[in-house]
Length: 98
Image (cartoon, rainbow, N blue to C red):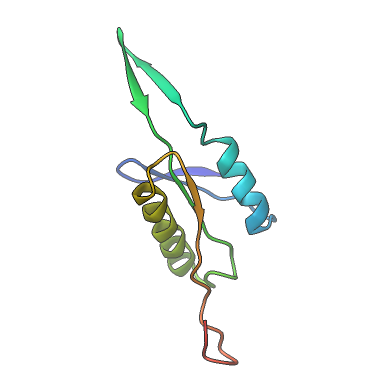
């Protein structure tokens, strides 16, 4: 499922898949050099992706999407046209650690 998340951000929900497979989906859609034709001129378009895995990165919609959004910002900071996975694991209720 694809939906607009806000502004120029979109969310892609890939049910019943692992974070590793979601990374593959994102990488397929992030070519290193993409051009979009707008009217008579070409404009450079970058696609940066952040990936979060439910429930490893959050057990609620807000927690998971927040971790994915954080990974997205890391991808943009790293130079755009990149995919980054969230490195923030949800807090474990059993151990209290991340």
